[in-house]
Image 1: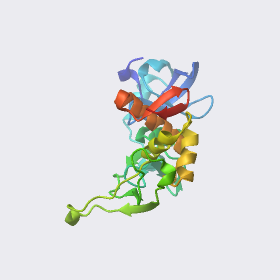
Image 2: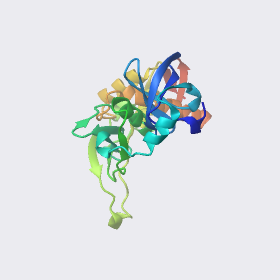
Image 3: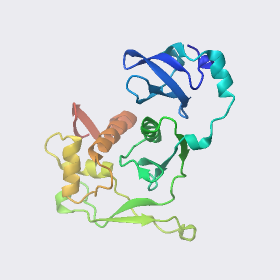
Image 4: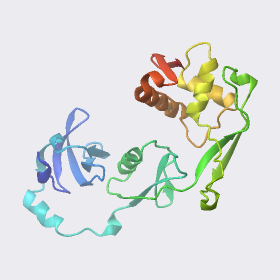
Length: 246
């Protein structure tokens, strides 16, 4: 089908996970496509393109167009807010008094999760906060010196931008990616992302926040650096899931 043929509230035969099932379109997705409900599983689905819809099942197109001219009361649709706890942090979403406990690297991941839980939801976004968590290193190992001989003492803090302190030197921020580079420099064998996280935590190079899967975050960050910087990357993927210092 074509995009201009899709009507909100209609039920179409659609391709979902390699199966043709009836799907009721509930709303347009703010990220593109449409949100609907799988009439077989009663779960929310995301229809990315009109090509996934095969034919109209019910009701008639004329009835749908007439019904679409009557606005539905806003109270019938739950409100979902997508937000960040701190600047540069993971995305979350909440609806009413309930909040999703999971962390999402990208905002569209949080939106998809929210729409699966509340297919008819009205999505809104909170502005990114101006504060962020930083890690201050009191000692840094010298070039060529093992990390064990000069452990970092990490202090978690929150900072507010101060217009009057423009000339002040900002605190150095130690990220999980930088800590991973330090560990791999002194590692004698390739390591997995999970093993690297365990090492940086044990050595005090980095402190885990609210995220439940820091190893997945680190894995994605190392892959991005390898793809972006190529020969200048600090990491090298030697086997599936194993990394060394470049």
